[in-house]
Length: 168
Image 1: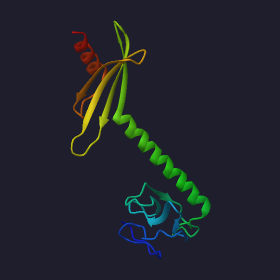
Image 2 (image 1 turned 90 degrees about the vertical axis):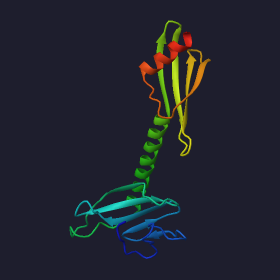
Image 3 (image 1 turned 90 degrees about the horizontal axis):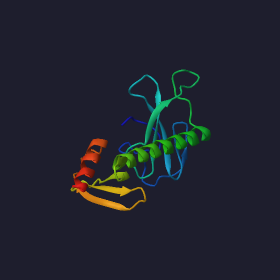
Image 4 (image 1 turned 45 degrees about the horizontal axis):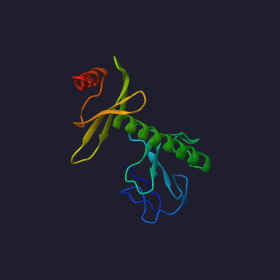
């Protein structure tokens, strides 16, 4: 983790134990978020690390503006802090949407009996992950449900093949 010489900053996790509000040029913190200006290790510039209270890893690390001297970082202020909070919320929301899309997949298949919606719901358990494959008719009535492996790949072909086994 980049080093920051700001009072109250724990180098191990970027947060101090009491999480007191701070408003300094390189560290802004409120009740929920901490924005810390750090040396950008991938570049010659600076970056801002946004960390949510209670989290050990930052939600977002992004480039930060150089100051007028083109050497030191521009100081954080309330407007920048609020913008970083909004950006961090957007990153979290996109991550949640992506995770939901991965864990809850659905396809619509046209069959001789009508349109069927096939869903795959994955339960991401570290020890015993599982998944459930379900088929519903156009009215939403459950036609079939089956446990499948958590790594089951739902595709039009796999859904069609499963639906054909139901008719047999």
